[in-house]
Image (tube, rainbow, N blue to C red):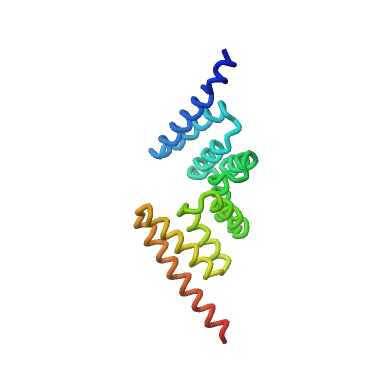
Length: 179
């Protein structure tokens, strides 16, 4: 019977159903249920990078950084191109003020999903922390465009405020360098 189940992919079907339930629970801000459903999915298919990355993201949202990092690392062992795992590791590095590490992870996430507004936003913020104001402005303009495509006015306003700050810092820098 087990061979028949594997042949028809029922384990994968069940794992995907748990994954969908986890996403629904996350949308309802029920992180405990989301994590529980991801645990079930991972018990059925323990080699899906996407599942580890999603559970890691749920842990990150829940403030359980150590578990989030473990899940992101596991996802990246399975697939170094897993976008959400790279994004999550970038967020952790950013919170730790590891600007170079954050930059590497966010660049990897961007390579996997170039139009994701949150990644573009973080790339701008990392460039700002590294005092590369022109690059920060470029990334933030891209983030604004991506937020605009999703109609997220609140994020656009915040990003525009940062863009203005980057331009102001760039102008100051240029004035100091011209002296």
